[in-house]
Length: 79
Image (cartoon, rainbow, N blue to C red; front, side, top):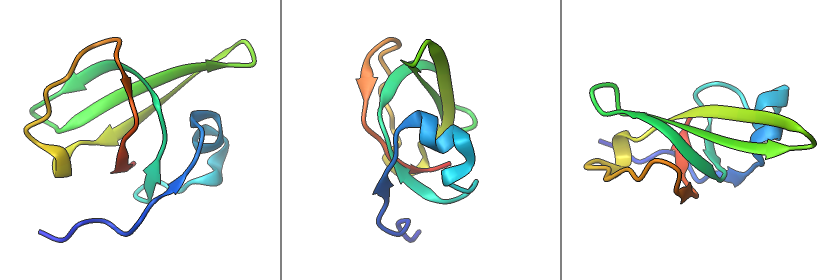
């Protein structure tokens, strides 16, 4: 399995604004809100400017992933 291309750092609100296309590699940060091990997907969330922003990232390249709900994560992963 090949690793994804190097990722550029984006804030979650930039990802949600469309600055990053689905399937692109991204480096971001946020609190882990949920994790679906059967799908290798983690949902990160952060508040900015009175809005809550969320993004779902693939955890395939970091499995086995030992999630801690509510903890801060800085992933580099495909969206």
